[in-house]
Image (cartoon, rainbow, N blue to C red; front, side, top):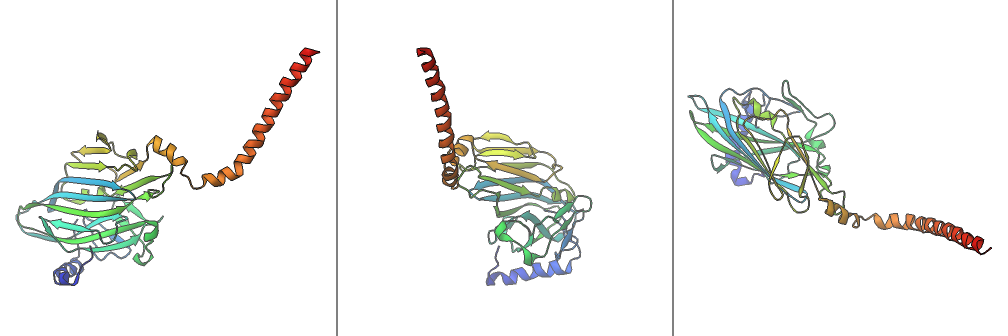
Length: 295
């Protein structure tokens, strides 16, 4: 979320907290190095627990609106103040909102290149990212960090809501039969809170790509173009899904292929010649057979 000048005063304490605190907790997970150079190392949080997460994903054309609602609880008898970090690929700049206990909170959003060397090490949870200046937003291949502050009173529980727009991978903008969309959501960092339970994922598709083509999690279709995943524990993998057109959309889209006219220009004459040759051979065979009968 872009911070306007009147919010600078509110943002300063967050920046100071991020710079001075040697360890932070959140994705929500716990980055031990909050200044995010070329790597982020996460460590286990021993104070805050996630009692439930509801993830709403609504696909709209080439983008998806994502709303992640975490119900979080301070399990200790003392106040907890911590910077927090949320990670996601391909966040649309300027469309990030974080609500902490119902109140919008200042955020800092940074974008980094997501390339072949980008990886998540599940042993020490080190996210390796490239220099942010090289982020290729045009190709939609980035990993983005959303930083904000959390403050809990002893035993306090409230919701943390992270909302943002996600740029789908694949070919969601195409208007013919190769159209498809891909989405990835980092679930596993949430395992680094003190505890995690009760995950619900609601996936809402639009008319352009109404089919859940593939997913590493088992979704149940609960309504037209609506799918749901429910688990009382965190999956062992991050979420990956692929959405696609229906078979009749692909069939109709085939005739919208802009290359169809080019293909026709090259192949139709060949097909005509082949058909003419085959027809000529058949005619010759029949003509010869009729002639032989008359003889």
